[in-house]
Image (tube, rainbow, N blue to C red; front, top):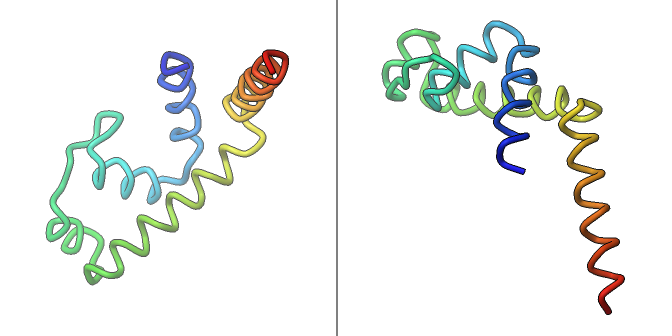
Length: 91
């Protein structure tokens, strides 16, 4: 399951807007972005610390919107449904 997530998550990340990729990439240090401390993000984005967290939360919401209906979402639903069906058969 982890292998599939690691393969498919970059596709979702790449569909985000430039600002969302910048925020998430630097906030978490993922997909080739250098992790920045919050103070550095404050300066780069010209926001308050609360603004940085709000921007991060908005970027995560956008990522969730892209995730729903994606191949990864459909695969996960099928995987989870299959596991639920398999465990119900054991009862």
